[in-house]
Length: 523
Image (cartoon, rainbow, N blue to C red; front, top):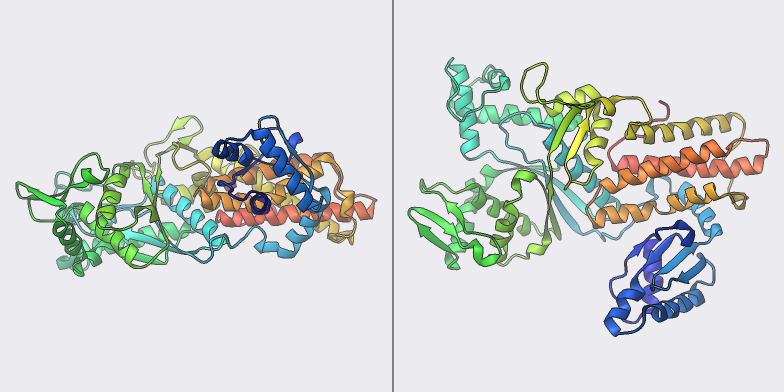
């Protein structure tokens, strides 16, 4: 619907600014709202209310009541739109007809997107923070595909450098019965990995393979799979890291300080210069990261999105500085920085696993509360906010649990539809005008907005918007259900209400599927 309104407004303003569509603060004023007249007036020096009145008059002449029953302006210059009840009712027919494809669009126009997320070091089990980036990335990929983008999902394996060397040293120490070296990995899993090594000449490689296979299994259990696992070692084997360093040197963008080679990143927006090659002659992680992103550009993606943890916040400016210095359009790269996750049992902060006395792994969380609940809770908040994850709430079968609340709404509708079928009643579309109460209208407006929510989630790269939508839709339906009998002695009204319930179940199922969750038919 937002696209329809944008098209209408754009058709009556010759030089329209960016048209933003929202909702009035009070839904009695309308279903949609835009401030385009205010923005336009600032650009051309006109009076907002006069501009708004002109736009309203012209749109009314075009629409002639086909979509909107009321189009009005406010004294401040906002324009409000109230959707025609008949249009809302016809949309139920559209939902039932489109079924699983309802809410999808082609605004992405098949543009290529590369989404890289998780990318944890293959030096240990994944933790709950990794799970958050995994679910955010996976849901975002689903959403982008739903609006017409071609999406590839990629995991960058950091199998080169100091951390994997420490891993190898730690595993060797356990194999030989020695103490873990200073700065090494001392978790119980190191002993487990050490017990699986078959070739003492390839400890590092076998340890990485074992831990990586564990990570893949955990992610798969969470419903997260990738098109490609890109190994950092590939960049070194192909000489791509040395090549990108030489490119920076050839452009006069490096300097030596002692034996270390530095990049003049402060000349391109970074807060200080950065080391490319350490004094021991080994390239830094930063140098490999530049090479990796050049490789992404060379694969000709229209958009590249990275989902990083909060500890990588400082890498954004330096990476974009290097790409800009080498002539790559930095605006093609979008980086989502996520905040930390804290695990709770009710009000008690949980730091350690009861089984190992160490960090609670992502696998343990999934095993305890199941994958759907884990996914929902991990994607529910904006990634740039801290997340408190309550294990007890996530596995509770109560309406306080948001994933249970939404799932229960879908299961409740499935039960209604089964009862209707037993009574010989099917969804009917010939008398949808009988859906005339305010709760019914509110539910139909919410269903109409689903496509807008999907597009907005994609545009702003905010999958958590869909959990808010799902909870709001579930709340509206539960409220409607307690006020109205869907199945009654009035067969025509029953058929119309069954159509409304069926449409709601389709949208609830579709939004949950975008979140990677199967909608249950019974609880």
